[in-house]
Image (cartoon, rainbow, N blue to C red):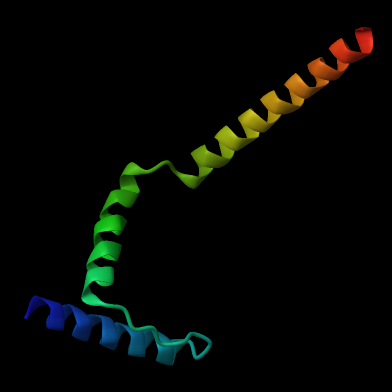
Length: 78
């Protein structure tokens, strides 16, 4: 019963979003996939923010560039 209700909600929301934007295709997913998506979405707040991720990537990229420069300097010194 719960699965049927979830599918009805998904179907109606897909139709509404599809009518609002004709560029999107309708997608059918199983109840298990839907429940996994809902479960995963509840964990999203615990994940790192995009800004923090990009800041970390920038920091690590800078470290890699610095290490590469130092490696080249050492190689040239030999």
